[in-house]
Image 1 (spheres, rainbow, N blue to C red):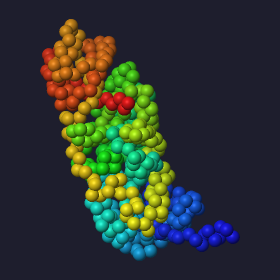
Image 2: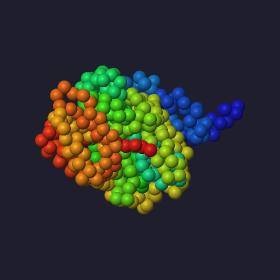
Image 3: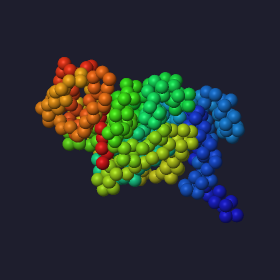
Image 4: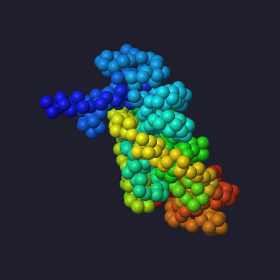
Length: 442
């Protein structure tokens, strides 16, 4: 009787899912399996009532015919019976139109679309504010890890100083295999594709673009600035040599594709690139396809968030968490909701993003030199003239000539680049130097 009375008290939130693929199917499954748990938390019956998918047969098979199914996403968005539109088709063309039309129809929106938020979030959030609806996007960054909520709400008492993340599972799997098995990038990429970690065209992952989308979103929330995807520096892992992974390990470092953003007196650093991290750091030991984000706040200090960055149900977990927020907050005033980027809209500041030449970092350098006396002295003099000090050096044995590997203390990147140009001009240095950035994350 008590449960019957409780059921009668429940309000219903009608959810329309656009795209019933991997994440959409996971979202439907999690909501159906844990619906009672969601209702206990919210006092609302969060129910998928409508689905839009081009494959109606597959949608019927997954849902068992319990929902209204269409192959017209815009018909779903216009349906007055739908309270919340969950956009899970990806891309930035049709998806953008669907999201903006849902907002125009005064429907709340949940999306897992990091590219859409990173590239068009400023426009989307502005439209949502005008219509008084919520746009939630926890699943757009780091899959099931609740990093958006942590940055926007849990760490709200802090001035965020910097954050760094391993936020692409494909590249992390590749780098883990290269380190553990001594393989090259070309050796591993095929295996990653076979196992489903990498797409047939892995460019977005291996060139750092996917991680850049996610970092832009986190930096906007961390520092209260607009989303600035066009200004992020991105460098992938395709040119990373097995040799450098080995030398880094000899020196006590592990190479990761790291997404880094820092607040400095000169502006905001916003960059994704292969990075040496001290092996003693927890984040350096995040292996395989897992994700992790390290956040430094002035009050709390460092906090680490770790978990599955992709997959049907981990990502669905984040989508459903957003639906829970909407169920709780859809009827309250805007002032009682967390702003889209964590700061009141009129308090978002247009902070400058530093060009990569102006960032400050420590560096790993590898050069190949003829085996003659005086080469190292010439190299160290060039570095000293640019006020760059050496932290460590190794000179592994080689059959012809010699590799020289240096670790430097922090310097401004343009000074390092000027020094590298002079070193490469030395007659006893062969070819181009390898330069990798280093982050202590202390």
